[in-house]
Image 1 (spheres, rainbow, N blue to C red):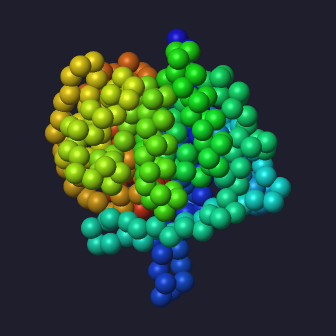
Image 2: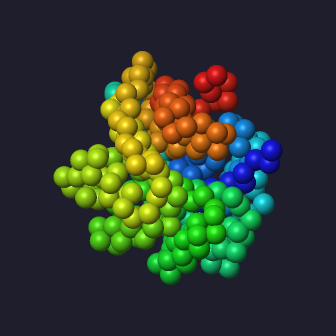
Image 3: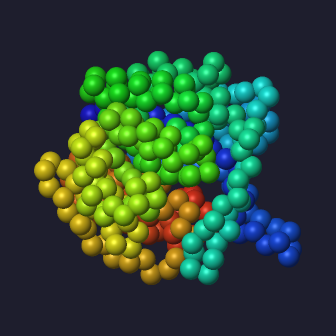
Amino acid sequence: MTRPKIACIGECMIELNQIDLDTGTARIGFAGDTLNTAIYLARLGCDVAYVTNLGTDAFSSRMIQRFEGEGVDCNLIGRHDTRVPGLYAIETDPQGERSFRYWRDSSAAKTLFSGVGAALADLEAFDVLYLSGITLAILPPEVRANLTATAKTLKAAGKTIVFDTNHRPRLWPDLMTAQDSFAAMWQATSLALPSYDDEERLYLGQTPTQVAQRILDLGPAEVVLKNGAAGPLVSWGGQSVQTAMPRADHVVDTSGAGDSFNAGYLAARLQGADPLSAAAAGHRLATAVIGHHGAVIPREAMPV
């Protein structure tokens, strides 16, 4: 049976973690929300391509080598002559919660679907599109609208569109622009994978049940609302189940928790699992990820 072809769309950056300012050391990696998901999808046996723009610098070339080594198709990664990848640093507190510092003004990914690299028409070759609120936020408004419209057209044609809000307020000019952009994208979405903390910041005071219903009313057939240790709320086919997942024994760094959950969930669904079994698969992978530093854990640390 032919595996569905997945396109993950977004931005990959240079990541600095395990930073020690006293010794002047840090671990350098490559990560980004949709890229993290793409790598985990590939590790879970999916046919996945990454769609972004990078530069022509050595970091960009090394990124592509890394992605290809993970089994990710890089044929739709454009190379911009004057742009470079963005950079971010992770700081973690004793509980493993992280904060970020970004340097991304010259990010090549901001030029995606603007004449360098992939065109929107290239997305028609895929069965599944996966993108996030960060994907939308970094694009110029016109390109953002065109990408959303393309997703809506492809959904109508029977493709599966998967979206995670992954709301980063600093990337948006104001709250209303983010709300409007996400509402339009939910209409173009088949499978919604938001997080409650993101949605609660967008719509203060809404309960998880209200969040899930608001998104369902906009068009997705399936909503999986991630909610940390409380477990995801899974809504599909007229039913809604608040799951109870085992707590992680060891939390080092929560970077990539949602991205890896999304990969585990989506891979399981594409391989025939029901939503509740897929949620358990996503949780199992996310639990392994938060027990390690960085958003992408070593391959040998993947759960069996």
